[in-house]
Image (cartoon, rainbow, N blue to C red; front, side):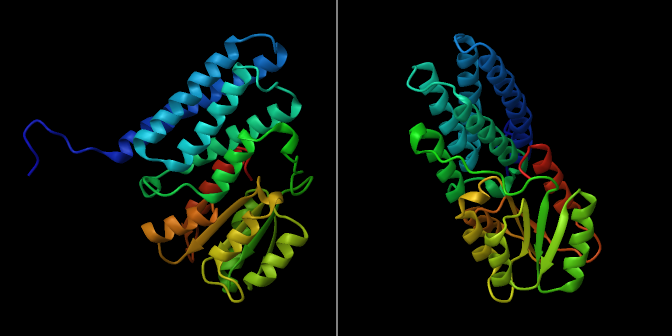
Length: 272
């Protein structure tokens, strides 16, 4: 029985409010970054961007969204370096900051109750380290492909592969598929994809291991990696996050609105 006058905390309600406010703050940072590029001598844009990043970091910390908090903190540190004139806003720094905003937008859009309290993902921490690194040590990695976006679907079931091929083609991707995780890894390392959707249980190499191996390649820093499973739950969601997947979606024999929703969100954020 709840104490009189107390109301049960609705995590989903707080999360939705945070996502709305954080989206506004990200828009503000992007607009102020453009303003700073036009006038590098102005200090006002840096102050506004710093405060916006700080607000996102604080909200994420309150909700225990560790990936969002870690990346927002790294962005805040980079902006602090600009403010203190420890770094200059050259083309490389601006590009890195824009990419970090895209990553952060994607993480915020995909945040859920299952994201709360998990350990920060390795790929997030690696990218955060890149933001804090000395500019001379940061390598500029080209996008995986030019022109039409490429996707790879990996699953042992021909029906699942064909279903997801059609879904992703409707989203504008050029799609390949295979039934073996080890073969998929070889293809992915030979010629990187913009999007990889893999089943958790594959012959040759499982989905978690496949995503971990691809995420370790710097060329996949801007790629979208999605896992799909017949089951869902906190443990699977945690493992997917830890190995570097953007999302875990449930397989469906008819349609997968969750997958297309994830892909469209990430595409809008520039992550697929």
